[in-house]
Amino acid sequence: FYVNLPVILLGFLVAGPAVQETPRQKGERVDWLGLAFFTPGMTALVTAIMKGNNWGWGAPATLGTAAAALLLLAGFILVERRVASPIIRFELFRNPTFLACSVVALSLGGFIAVGSFMAPLYLQSVRNEAPYIAGLMLLPISTLVVIVPPLIGRMVDRRGPMKFLPPGQFF
Image (cartoon, rainbow, N blue to C red; front, side):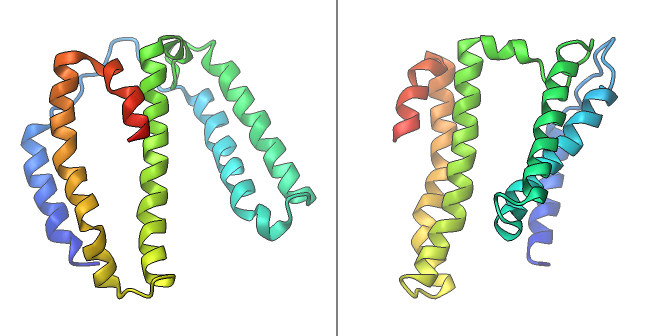
């Protein structure tokens, strides 16, 4: 645990002067009603998914929690369409570029989460590699994660995102 503290401290020292505070927009307010629907809705959804296996997928507790999640999240969508300062501006998803970037970001995040969990688990549990060997075997992937994004970012700045999103989903 304490090994990470110097890295975190260094991150704060480097990012502190470089990152500017976003100025408050005039007329923007906290959407308390949307928050009141979204927070318990997502909590119920995650609870139903996480506990469904233990409770049983057809159990009243699972079905009731999932139904509560759906009702609360449907209420959230209705509220967000009517408030002046919504948490999520759903009209943004009508823009094909925004929608494509959102789908890519969501799928990439999912792949990274699954890969960073499953790859070490596979190497250690199935192939019986020592944890440090598994880490060394995954080091090339980590290296690419550090090197490739700035290069692709420069290319996207020059040519636009839509040339890179479709092939980036498959390679």
